[in-house]
Each structure stands twice: as C-alpha cells, then as structure tokens.
Image (cartoon, rainbow, N blue to C red; front, side, top):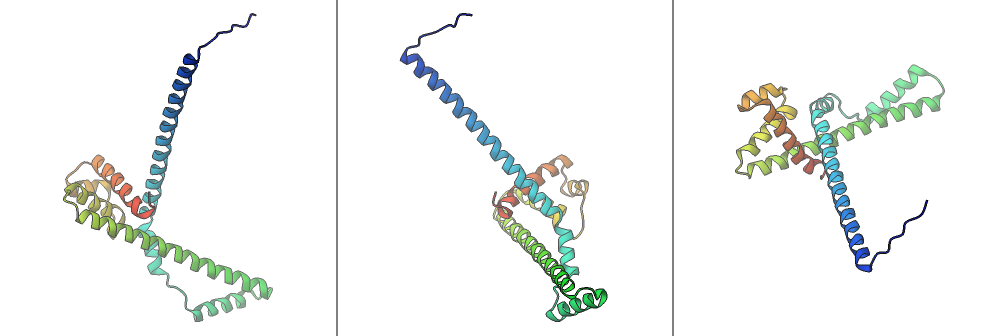
Length: 185
C-alpha cells in the first residue's frame, strides 16, 4: 500500500491547532462542570445523612452521660474483677473501651452542635428573607429531620398545602443550603 502525504500551509496548520485547542477547552470545561456537580451532589448526600441521623444521635447523647473519673475507675476495676485474666491486657482493653466510648460521644456531640449551628444560620437567613417559599422550606426541613415528632412527606405536604413532589424538591434545595453551612460546599 502506498502512503499518502499531504502538504499543509502554515495557515492551515494554525487553523487545525486553533480548532483542536477550542475543542480541548470545551471538553475541559464540560468535565469541570460535571466534577463540580458530583461534588455538590456528594455534599448534599452527606448533609441528608447527617440530618437523618440527627434525632437518633441526639437521643443517644441524652441517654449516655459522660463518665466521671470515679466511674471510670470503678468500671476498670469491675472489668478486672470479672475477667481476672492477665492484668495488663485487661487494663489495656478496658482503657481502650472507655477511650473509644468517650471519643464516639465527643464526635456525636460535635455533629449535633454542627447541625444545630447550621440550622440556626439557615433560620437566620430565612428570617431575613421576604420569601415565603424559603420560610416554607425551612419548616419542611425542620419537620422532616429535626422536630421531636416525626413527620412523613405526606403529612408535610398536607400541612403546607403542597404536593409531595414539591416537598421532595424543597427538601433538596434546603439540604443544598444547609450543606453550605454544615460542610462548606
């Protein structure tokens, strides 16, 4: 087979390079938009998960009090008496168990405080707004995730006199706003 060769002028090469550069920039911008959208969706997903667990975590914090130093010592000795195994292993395991429990409690407390702060900032934003829609979104979010009484989507829709589809849309928008306060995205 014979190889074909073409000769191009400098102007033609410049046009080809210009078109290739424009296409590369267009592809880069499209990929950048997709990456930002994925990051935004991920932050909304994280926010919804945090809000869904809000009631459960808050209830567990109320039920579990932080141990006093005396209680920690008593727990350690009770654990040692029960096992009467090798002393150092037992002490180390009980120490680790107590530290793990305290660390989880601190993480949970931080999560609840973070959500409460994000909600107060969102509430302040809504209160300063003239939008009835924004105020409704806050009420829907509060009813769905925060209120002591658990509301279903249907109950929220009925209370607000809107469709369930609008409730889902509003919750998505509200979670997007809350995620800015909660996660920073």
